[in-house]
Image (cartoon, rainbow, N blue to C red; front, side, top):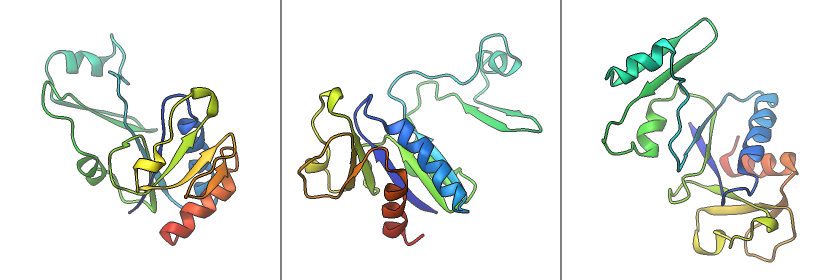
Length: 163
């Protein structure tokens, strides 16, 4: 599977760019999966549901399956967070996996940047950042795309990965 990341600081447009890229690549006929790293506690299951009750009772892993989707929830219960590679190994093979976050992983990335966020660029310190998507012009070594120019960003990723 080909892998490409979107990275950047909070509130810099990563999720919106991810969403648009998934749409763009699937419209081009590619199969796409995503993974997102969260720095906060997150729960896709809600208290009161049967699956939540299973987890709270101590289940290490719960699979919630229906005719529309499957969710696998795994409780770490103090164990170390799995690596990105371990998580990717669990995915069903697709043409492209887009990764949101995982700043410190070495896969190729585009950095999302919004001037209003007031954060420094990651690109000067990270060789895995191959380009930037920004809401303002930037002077840097990597190519810079308009944050909203999804087609140009997708074309860049496709060229980098020979898709």
